[in-house]
Length: 72
Image 1 (cartoon, rainbow, N blue to C red):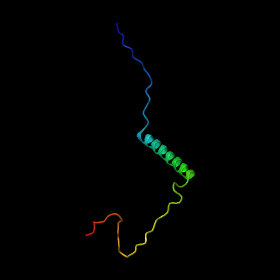
Image 2: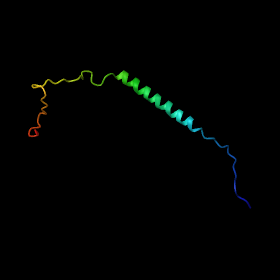
Image 3: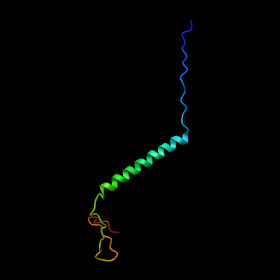
Image 4: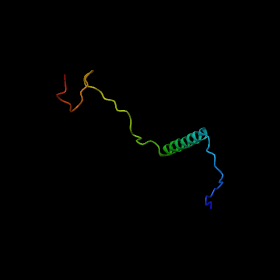
């Protein structure tokens, strides 16, 4: 008595690797586009942030405050 069951289910063929890579790149581009759009809507993180310029008392002095005793 043979109790083996053989099913002939249709086999799904795997998509080619370049299709998977293309889909991944499209998903990545969509995520970057969405994050850029959200960033544009949110605006700058620190609107008053600007470059700070220091004016030295003496030209060529590079004193790092609080670092006494480090002179050579």
